[in-house]
Amino acid sequence: MGDVQFAKILGYLPDLIRGVGVTLQLGLISAGVGLVLGLVLALMKYSRVPVLYWPAAVYIEFFRTTPPLVQIVWLYYGLPLFTGYDLGALGAAAVALGLNIAAFYAGLSFYGLGEGGLWLNGVVLLSSIRRARQEGLAPREAIARGCEIRFRPIVVSAVVAVIGFLPAALSQGIGAEIQRPLARVVIGGLVSSTVLTLLVLPAICALRSGREAEAEPPSVAAEPGAA
View 1 (cartoon, rainbow, N blue to C red):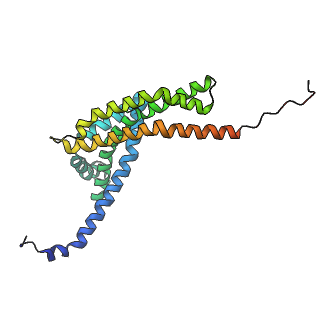
View 2 (view 1 turned 90 degrees about the horizontal axis):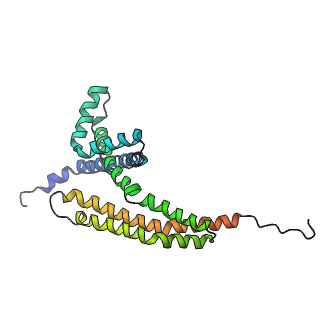
View 3 (view 1 turned 90 degrees about the vertical axis):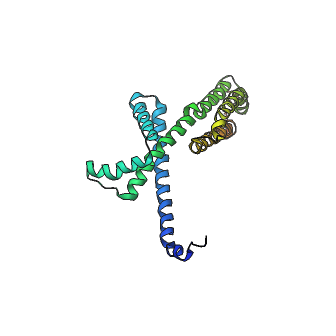
């Protein structure tokens, strides 16, 4: 520690601050690109339409299995070579990291949409509520009936999935640095999706049914003496 000259380190403080700014800028751009593109890819894959499904699946597997540094090198050196367009160092890094992050976001979004059951559970819950309405129940009674029917399957499916991801979320072995954050994000998504499906969605349905009831015009009573 006695050999460290902090005065020289402080002399580079402006460069260090500038580096932090570049890092934050790079992170925000790549995260934004990855989030939007990942959601689009997840919807393409979830559609099951071959024209949309296979390009999204190939993209996700390709960018998830190649190192981000290799992707940055491809864009920085290969793009000007083949197209003549130079993104620059920051642009190439932002685009490459955004494309790489999009592949992982797409996997998480696809799990939440289809495999995780957020979309499916919501659709099934609404179908149960609509079926109860068709049986003649009042709106609030239909919502309570639908939630009562779907409560156990939704909770059990979420608990089973969370238990399956717990070993990866608590792992300490080789590759745990990658598995732990991914598993914890999925567990958080499962918990939040279950809460949204069982609490927020019925509340929205109740509010909407109440507004529709208020918007309905009162029934006109028949005039006395009318034929």
